[in-house]
Image (cartoon, rainbow, N blue to C red; front, side, top):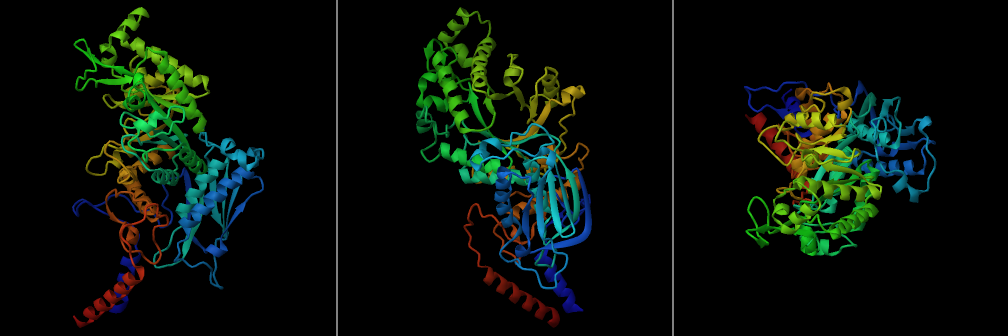
Amino acid sequence: MKILLLFVFIVFIYNVNCILFPIAVRLPLNGTPPDMGGSLWPKPNFQEFKNEQFYIYKRNFSLVLCPELNNCERDIIEKLWSHYQNVFFTPKLPNESPNNAENILKTVSFRIKPENKKSKFKLSECEDKYYPFIQDTETESYELNVDENKANIIASSIWGLVRGLETFSQLVYTPLNSNKLAVNKTKIIDKPRYFHRGIMLDSARHFIPLNLLKKHIDIMMYNKMNVFHWHLVDDQSFPFESKVYPDLHKKGAFSPIHVYTQSEIKELIEFARIRGIRVIPELDTPGHTYSWGLGYPDLITICWKDGKPFQEIYNFHGKREILNPIQNFTYEFVGELIKELKNVFKDPFIHLGMDEVYYRCWESNPNITEFMKSNNMNSTKDLEQYYMSRVLSAANSLGYKVTVWQDVWDNNVKVFNNTILQIWKSDKDWREYLQKATKDGYQVILSSPWYLNYIKYGSDWYDFYKIEPTDFTGTEAQKKLIIGGEACMWSEFVDGANSISRLWPRASAIAERLWSTMDLNDVEEAKFRLDDHRCRMLKRGIEAGPIFNSYCGNYEPYMSKSLINEPVFNYIESTQQINSANKNQIFLLFNFILIFIFFKV
């Protein structure tokens, strides 16, 4: 009996995957851990989960694409299937089923509802014809059934199939004390609450390497987020390769290696497209443009003080900053740059920034004040209106739809009716901003409560999770103008070393808030699933940070690899090489010594 108990104990500590612990014994955990294999993030609208299990073996498991899928849709699923093969199957899992094996899951089939059947296209047309410009919640809806040795995913569009495949991947698990993959009999009906669910990542304050951006895109797919808002340039650097104005990046980037070439950007856009994720560039103007002036100084306003040019006033302006709004050269330059972005990026939207336009430098410049007098401008707000109208007209003339930060609207500058406002400020309650912006008839994206570059001690994801976007005084028509939200990661203190752990899984809380139903708001229930999801991301090679006191078995960073669970995507090679065979021998020796001591004592 002693040997049996000891063996059970050793097997348990060796195979367990994730357990949360309380902060202190006197503060026990609330909530109930999820059932094994049924822990999904974000939580579906409807899930029916049964105890009946089906087992998966690589050589007995295949993909079925139904006839109504065209070439472009097949291409997306086949590429993702190849990706998820690495998620499902690790090298140490058995490939073939035993001769007497029962309850084997043999196929996963993908089908688009016949009434939504689309025309056929050549593969060369897919990048344009199948870009995930999603503007409603039905496009990503899907149904998933696991039953009778097969799994079926049916959706309204290819993007629903993509979301359903991620859900299926989360259903697959390794039962404790087993070396087999399993999935339970399950029925899921699901769709997002909001169609715009984004991450805003700043790569100008610190350069974020391309492979790391791809890793963030993968994580977004794992969390069913669908918009990558790329804050591409700022005061600190201009890392976008401009072929029209090459001195922008040659003199404005940190160095020649801190530049995103246009071919690399197109590669990233295609990588994101396959995963059902839009890539929206942000060209922030007229402020945040110091780096532009390093290559093209005539663009930037000269600041004055006491009758002298090139004078800085700390906390108000530098020697020169902010685009000069009174010269045609500025608008020709910005217009050509927007046109160049249009030729690189595929999304119908561009984000034109327009935040933090501080007036003091404009007001200090005698040429600008004279221009204002000559054009009957009574305030600097009128000058901002002049700038914004010309730039928005240039973007619209190229076919672009536009998003801006809320600042221009705050300044009582008239914004085109089809412009989307991104609410980011926290000097007032964000609810007040939503109430006023939607009353004025604007579609809005909420970001104010989701600035993830700010950190505090403790489980701050609780605060992100409990935000309810419609929690403001307004009509139902106003609340329908909220198209979604974005988690923002500004990079003043973030780079390649910590962007993953700073953003994830904290952004996962926002992902569920924007995907799942309004009534799903119990943090005590969510924390167990989020911890399990964090462990799942670790297994996939994502260095997601902890949300509480917990552990994730043997696939935590720098831990020895277990027989079954090990990271499946090594985006960044570990600096610590681990010899698994030696580790296993040491483990067995330790068990032998422990048993010997146990009986001697």
